[in-house]
Image (cartoon, rainbow, N blue to C red):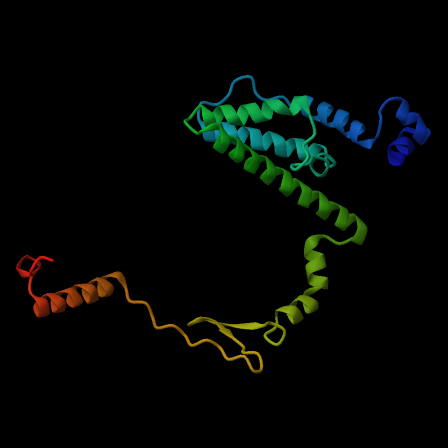
Length: 213
């Protein structure tokens, strides 16, 4: 609230004449942001393209308003009426093609959170770049020695073995479990079971010749 007041050139307490608190201010800002990003009047016929349109428009919205993605909550969603058309757009695309509503709503959340989560990380990187004066490539070059030390075999609890997966280093006094025998393929296993059945039949005779209990 202090930052908003400073940008507007007014006293901080004067903002509370218009909104109750920061959450109320964010709610109004979200309403205005989503209202400014309408969906197309004509929806694509293909459901994949329809979901893609919603995802791309959300991405444009989050990039145009960098504060929006971090401000939105998935666990305590804010009541933003102007955001409901995005939900209805995706639900109509999925449910209209035979998907049940609970699954369609889960898919909607997955798409929304994928776009939102990516936008949150992009915004975090923008803030980190502004604070450090380095982009992510420059930061990686600067911290390359530390990363190499962490990834070195001496610092790793397991050393990769290209032939047999991971070769674990035993702790003192704790023996490693013996390696299990290799699994036979399906044909070898079936042949083994068939051979065993033939041997049992040879010893006891065919089922039709055995006395009934």
